[in-house]
Length: 422
Image 1 (spheres, rainbow, N blue to C red):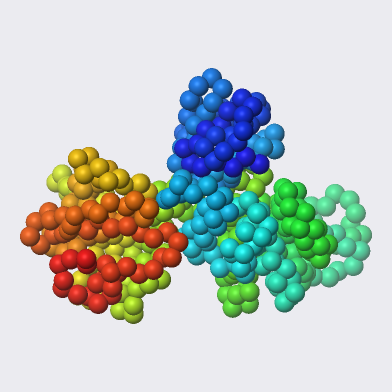
Image 2 (image 1 turned 90 degrees about the vertical axis):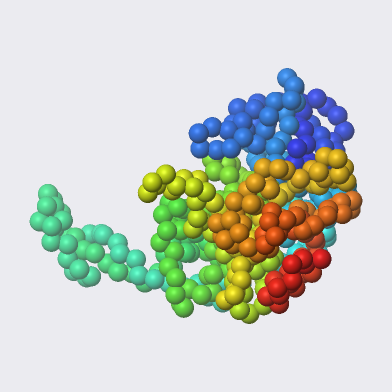
């Protein structure tokens, strides 16, 4: 399986593979060229670089082509490391935290020991949860079936009985049978079969086949989307809570920020900007003290209005507030540089955007934070940037690995009136 980084290249030429360029088959190349440039329902994740080379865009994850080629795309890491296991571990951590997944897998140790591609790690986590659920006991439920019986049992279906052209010696009845055939279990069986058919890990295949035998009385889902919609909530199904998001990840790709479209096999693809935004949000939310609340992408305000119509909705990545104050936090997946003459790579458009957020959400008074991934050579950006005497913007690094609360978060937690977190 080729492994590259975002913005890497894929070519049909035979050459030694690296994180920046890898060789793929002609059939995989043609499929990516045909479907990877986007359509009305999807977003482009490749661009043509030359007749035999395509360049990837800012998407990460795994994409599988119909010919069976599986391509792993890792983040263009915040440092120049080429340690695939370390980068993959970070990506899995970002996805699990962003989707609020809590698999039983140890995480770093599993990835490092087995050198698992990302999809195989999630498949293994799903199988672990399914195995634990089966060990504790699956929930049964009543299923209504219509049949014809030589004797009367259940409920007589009068309309079908009268309309029967022949076979009046049999009764048309409806039966409520207590069985394992319920939507949640059908999804579980379908997930197990999906892993068994698509995994390249012998351990995952073995475990999936064992679970398939244990689920022999449960049919596969005939309509995955419909069965997810019928998934019940309640105390009786509390044990199913951990396996559902992993099943959605593998079967339905019902993700809050993944790409849409027809994917085959064990594919999952994420826009890196959205993933970074969610990762920052989940990290900050977990670090806040009692009395503070975080809101993901508030959308109460618009930039302007025309009469009674409001135009251009404003959606910062995150709003933190307590009873007394508010703070705006925005995250950008971009590497800053040390070239002060080029404003360290900071975007004027981003500053305009933050200024609008400050006027509408903070009423022109308070502190805002613009987060960038921390790199080895992160510039010493001066600050805070003052839009006015009362409105300030702080440009700060975000540590992708430790997720430790920096000084700016301590300022928020204290609800301090300090003008600068530095």
